Image (cartoon, rainbow, N blue to C red; front, side):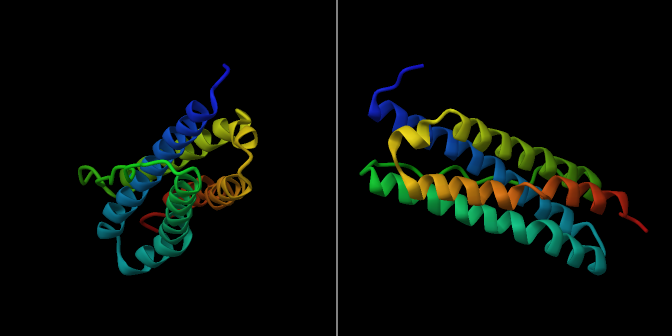
Length: 151
């Protein structure tokens, strides 16, 4: 699909905003999970998942805001998320994992679209790559943590 420059920039912000919302939902779900596990498991959850997701969330938000500022575009902050119902630590971690995978897929599609290259914004491309690097190993870590819950 051919975009005007303005449409391309808006598409980037929309897709990045959707990924940020998915990451925020993952963070909220991990917060719910943390409340439902013992202290030792909570420490593992913090180190393996919550900390890296929080870092990815911050980097994604900086990438979003920085791109909007460089393009002189007015934007709203991506919506905050809630952790959802307390359905148990395993279900909350599974929900977080699904949202992490969704965010990574959205960012992958954005990178594959070549829009970031067409816009010519090196900081945007670097930010997208960094967020994906942070998110990439998390589904495997999540599965490992879930596998050992209750042991």
